Length: 553
Image (cartoon, rainbow, N blue to C red):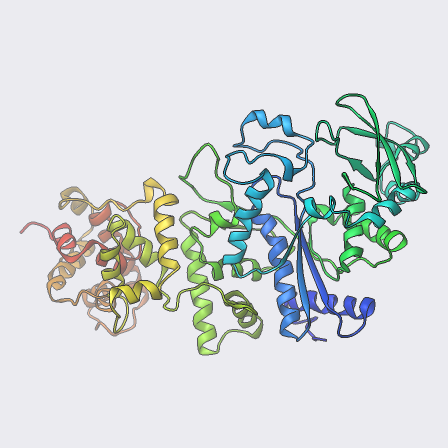
């Protein structure tokens, strides 16, 4: 067993607990089952992804330790549709109460409502390196996989109520506990007429395994034999612990809504042992994940913060790291706006520290978990080019890939041919293209001036004007690659102060550098800030820059 309790490695700590659970419940050498589950009731968002990735990370850590591990993911597609999400035609309200797997795909592209969102998520999960045993409850229940457990729940329904009711607030109940106990049913039938769960259970005969119920659709009383078929499902607070026992689960995370007193996990912990003969798995609560930033994509289907959406702008290994770097119970947002480049910069900085051996051990482990799984590497560029450089070049060239690659080539030593360079910087190049097209606000698009601006020039002070004149004079003889241009931008204020290009700037020179940068931004873009100046200059090109910064004689 790992000794990580004080290491700050939350994944290793969770794996320790799963290891201990499996050893106590199954003995040494047994398969460790790590579970996750999602109801595909609509677009599966970045918060749901946290459940799957948390389970995946813990399962991977256990595999690294040499255990036989299963990541079992349940699709709760036998759940009822509760409401119609935004972006779905209103007439789909007619399907409320039906299982998600039996409702048509709103856009006619998949076999069912559930298939649409499952397929979308599984494709994104594969890109993120997630492999799992995908289990659909719409197949498990009708196959009568849980027959014995369902019969137990029905036979002991009043005892189940006694457990569930412990966590109910009596002051909020309209009926007495005795009335509610008599009417409690842990199993809901889907009506063979309407297809919905608009049924009322009337009686259960354990000797014949026969359930009697009434259908609201036509008022008819019907029976079903649980030995022959299963046309319904257990209610959630019984279903979840039942499946813990059936699958012999050792670890499963859950959202904070499942973690409070009286929540699903608390109730399930009390139910699983006495009724299904298992012990509750170890548990990690996870917090909300949101997104921010302007997104210009729009359609009748709306825009949701789904994993496949995020992967349009965030390379897979980086997206994994955004979840790895924080404990599961810490909320965070993924910014798809102008600050996305900061996440890339932090990611690249970590990679450099790992490369040179200066990253702390826990950060190194998180990096290694981000870029590879037991099944192989996760997509990330073999050559790291600043995301800011890429989007600036793409924006300045209006998305021209050939011109962008020529600019990128100036930023690296001994650049390869364009095709090789493009391969080396994927998938970041494609992410930057998607971001410029869909997330870069119109107000932040590069709009260089078309001619020298005398008003902007007149607004500069004498020091700024002198620095710009020197800069313009040195432009023709400066090699037009990243390092020489960077040296020029930072060096002109040093030369103006009587220092050499290689001298360290003094505090007054740093202030002069900032003023000089503002002067260039004003002359080039009409703003005080913008992309990194060396990248901007290279993207615009010497022939464009020179006339914009050269005042008339």
